[in-house]
Image (cartoon, rainbow, N blue to C red):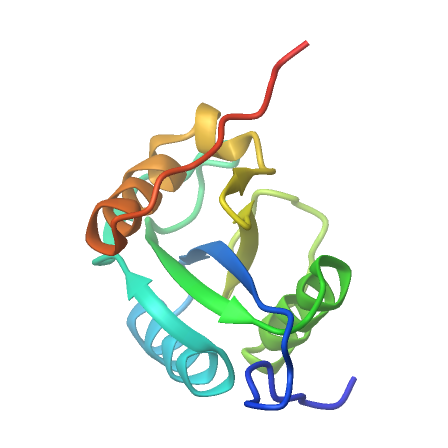
Length: 148
């Protein structure tokens, strides 16, 4: 998939996206590279500080560096999700047999246009803490999804 500009003055529809970042393979390098890519290809509104967290699920791996970013994009949800997977690949992400195993970068959409769309926000403090920091820094709040 080719790299595409996400924020251009000619596009009129804009979406705000809260992204959760996680890395535990050369975490400082991959975190800085992801931040550089996303802030140059999207409009960066706010970011959290990175926090170190213990792995969840598969335990025999290094700790993670987790953070969150709030960006604005002119892409629709599906195109932006595909873009994030492409960024993961650019950062050397290999999907191995262990779903919760080590990774150079994991980029997940937590909220789209102010609505939580990833239950990880409710289930994991390593997602919630950085997202809440971004919300506080940006003056934004989230619409809570109704649970059935």
